[in-house]
Image (tube, rainbow, N blue to C red; front, side, top):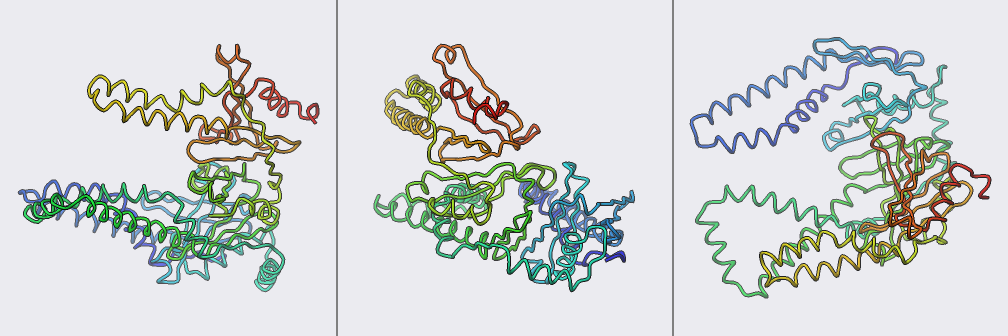
Length: 480
């Protein structure tokens, strides 16, 4: 490891693909706009020249890239024009993630993503293509070495002990199918399908398009409904396949000071989550999954990839009754779940219902001005929105014990977030004039100490309860 090494030659391919992918929409739009005019041939030549330039620069960058592990440091030298040398102390490394895309797996390669304790992107390192054996060896070297050399036999012995000692949880294919069926991804896929169709439409010959539309308009309502159902079922199946491919072979392992997650059928990812970076635990129950008794678990992580705060799923789908046993084995620091939530008072109902129905009311006013015959359409949405507001009020609440604060809220999905006392950065109480008259207040907590930090709270909580939360944060010993 101490001898400087280059990346695998496939790194040049990944570099070119990355650049072209970032420009693909601009290139595609340019080709479509200029197609058929006098500048088209020049545009094509320009694109070919640009790609050739990217290939040449990628080759030079690969030749000038070196990495090595020397003593207590990972050293990286790179730079096309300006030569950069980066030294990353092993003591600063927080996580080492291995990712294998389809191309990586074809060549038995992996990408090594190294994240440090800093929040500056320049302190992180990424090796885009090394052999899988080299990536695993590098992970062992940086993970287990701490100032002294450790024999590879000892490292293998450590990993064998970990396999025997530490707890693992996996998910079945059946549960993944349920996760895909209830994920709500069909809406996203449908939107992408519509956008894609609108782009492809311009390449369909006019006579073919006209014939298809004529046939479509002559069909009965029953035929159109069947066609719509076929399309929706197809998109729904695509959503299920996407979930199975993304989370296939999912496994989460609890080590002493980190969680280790592997997932993916086509793109295999190995993610390390240091426990000291976990700021909060979340339980998300979508409006489809909640009646079925299913939930998804995630954690909020400070200083993720590129220094950004990240939400990482630690299990795709669990029955609500399985959450606590799962946490007892995998994340016992956050097992103090409770169903004894203190909700908001009924006098808060108007606030929740007005917020939920504000947009439909605006639509109703516009409809009454410009299309009064259809006034009933936004009126129906107002009733639905007010029902949603009532549901949000009934969901909102909190629970505290000596070490934990739990908030429960809802947009469409029910979201329960648990924070440890030492992770809460601040507690804020807000009251409007009406709030003060009605003795209610909005409580908001911040768990990540920067602009993009995660905030959680409860609106229109009884003032005494809101004050109790503030006292728990600042005067904890007086509460318990």
